Image (spheres, helix red, strand yellow):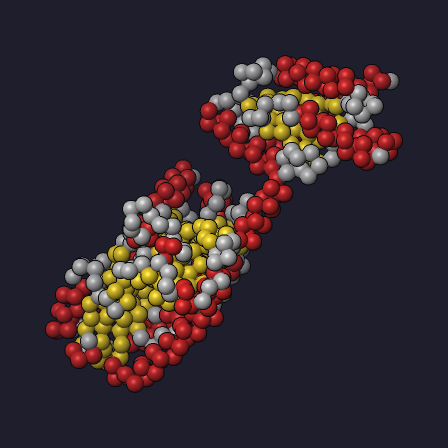
Length: 552
């Protein structure tokens, strides 16, 4: 097993994975989306497919549906690689998928490991789903919200009475909802990658091709009064161009006009459904007229968050309420040129209080006019909690120094910087002697004072050094740039000198005794911070042992 297909719309990831796998002697091909990957399968039968979940032009889930049951791929293993694996949970558990790898700092290592296991048949059979690479990754609220919105959108699209089809630039189908598949008389997965124009014949085909060739960015349609034949059914078509920075597609809405009355009833229900969501959703929503910058509609939650009546809300210029007034005098959402604009910002409520919001602004065309739909969540308490939790999570409460978690996080980064810049680092690992004796003899309050004094002593090193209480009676200092440090011996002498000066103050009534070890980090023989601590710990132990021998 040595053929691998990488499917990902990120060129950096494709290059990174292909280079790593080729070094392992795999034959690697790459595709930028599901559509091009599907074309690849006509001339390249891979043993393993590493497949991105979220892509333009046929996503990972659709691709799996398309190739399901394909005889030539019955032995092919599929592994999903996803940037939202932590947030998606079991959503990657699709038919034929063997495992999922999260896109994170260890992506390449996990891809190589899974490739080796699959190559050596040292892997559970399909149906036993595993997720790799989630270490050091945490669920992001915004990703979970976007996935939830995507699920809701999927539910809506899958339950619409109109057929919805999205076309790539070459007129091939890259999305089709169940209604479109039913109108075409074939399964959704069989519909994907088909040429949409081939479903028409004669003059109808010429008309459809002509409309698709127009690329003027406006909505075009074939109306109820001028219908075409689609799979022996009379249909009306709406062509909606969709443009973003990477691609341009066309969304085609197919309406079976033989069921107009039913469609009208469904439209009424859909309108009520959206109106109900608009009025009951716990996010604030406002509608802005782009031409006048005025707010023309607002849901109850937005009024509640700002503490304002609807009449007052509709009198506002949006730039005086939700949007910072730009110096250029133009809307910042429109200036970016994006369909959707996501941001966090601070706004003033009517009572003068500051509210932090997470806002999504979407530019849309309604009846030929442009509007901006802005939805926002109050994240004021979340912001306060995030700041507090971040500080607590990396700080030792007693001494104010970094705790073990904070030290390990910052030290790992410093080691990587030293590797790149060939800089020198030194680690001082210290252990407070006789802390238990102090606690038992003088009480824990004095023991705490002892630890605080040691922390102040270590804080005498430079601000650029990373200083931490690792836990209990253990402390560590990672010193960078030894131009002043002078090596292990001088660092040890300096610490002993600081300790001598501190004991001369006699603040505690007994001398502070600390055993310590100093080691240098060799960037020519890089190691992890845990290994460096272990080396310094051994020297500290020898120091402590020598003291006991002297005492004897």
